[in-house]
Image (cartoon, rainbow, N blue to C red; front, side, top):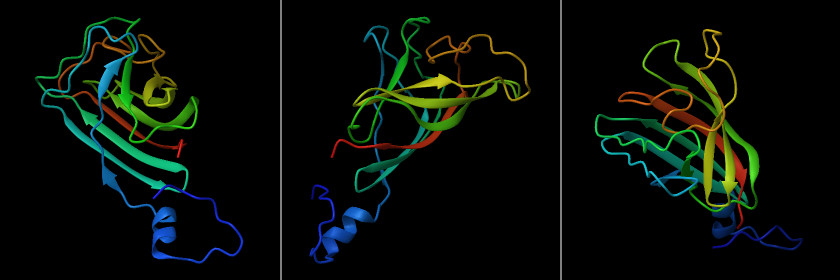
Length: 166
């Protein structure tokens, strides 16, 4: 049932309550790049991707721990990673969530934010220094070599919300 804004005189029904009461579900994210070249693949990564929608707001949680068979794409700094959204967004958005990325060492942890760069995908951008206050090797939208060369057991964790198209 598509969301319909509340109007005077409407009767509260089970269907209307279901529209407004989010129920969490899994989604299977698709991992691509902004150029479509050097495509990555999850391999044996551990992925938790959950979402819920209330009216025109989507809430999401994405946690990826890369595995020994993950292919990171190797496209370099001009081939930014994209992850599909659970439902299309209403528009492009600069900040739709916050989280962290984790490298191989405790010092390799830094804050990130999600950015909706097409209405069906988001990219992830570094948004601060490493948690031990050291400077990043590189910054910007993440890819196979930004902010570091990704490897087995590295992780992405992101929670957020955005306005949906319907």
